[in-house]
Image 1 (cartoon, rainbow, N blue to C red):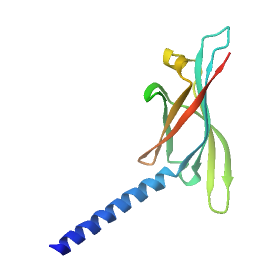
Image 2: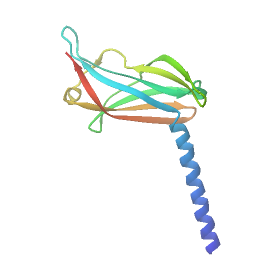
Image 3: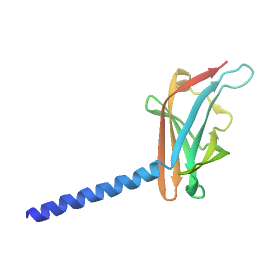
Image 4: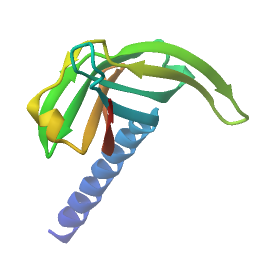
Amino acid sequence: MNNKLLLLIFLFSFLIGCCSQSMMIFDSTVTILEADCWLNLMPGGNPSFHYSGTFSIDKKFIDDFKFLYVKVFYKDEMIHQSQPLLQFYDELITDTTSLVRFHFYSDQGIKVTDKMMKAESVDLLLVFQIKDNTVEKLVKEIPLTRAY
C-alpha cells in the first residue's frame, strides 16, 4: 500500500513538472517590449481609438507563429477586440539567442465608445498561436493618452 502511494505521488509530481516546464518554454517565446494606447480626439475628424507596440519572438518560431488578436479591457470588461497589423522591425542576434522584433498596431478608425472615454488606463491581452499552442500575453495598466 505504501509503495503504491509513493509511486502515485512520484508519478503525479513528474506529470506536473513536465506540464509546467512545457508551458514555460512556449510562454518565453514571445516578449512584449512596448505597448501604447491613445484616443485621437482632434477636431475635424471622428474620434478614434488606437494601439501600437513592439514584441520579439525567437527566430526558430518565425515560420510557425500567428498574431491572432488583441483584446482591450477596461476594469476587467472587454471593450474592443481586433486583429493587429504587423510590420517587421529588426533582427537581434546574440551569442545565445536570435530574436526577430515586430511592430504591431491597430487598424485606423476604431470607433471610440463611452467606456473608452471614461478609461484612464486599459489592459491589453495579446494572443499568439505558435505551432499548435496558444500564447497569451497580458500588459496591464497602459495609460490611455488623449490627443486633442
